[in-house]
Length: 146
Image (cartoon, rainbow, N blue to C red; front, top):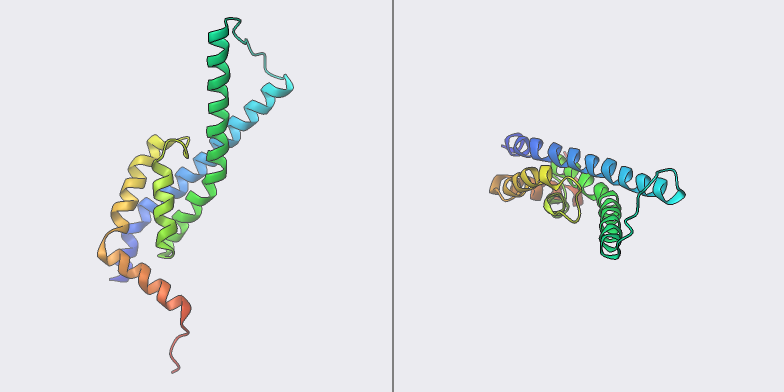
């Protein structure tokens, strides 16, 4: 029963780990491209019209902010996926699933939506909850003497 319940978490957990890894990579690339722009290694045509320039700066700032948040939150998604694989820390696994779904915290939220929803559905199943509770209870108490 325990292995069957944990096997249900395998694919969505691996999906969360992959989503987190892609988020980290995309966030890093976004920030590196911003750094190259900042030091002048990339020729950038800044619009001369005031409205277009404002839109350019707002879009650029939003893109770098998204890259920064993706890079910062990617380890949470990855670690939550690993916890889900092991049947530990259900709160962190749920947090990782929700972060994978949100567009503000994930560069590739379009891929994160199906895996995040799948992870949330699996984590709500009673047999999976029981496995997480058993793992948590076993961690705090030593095994009985034999």
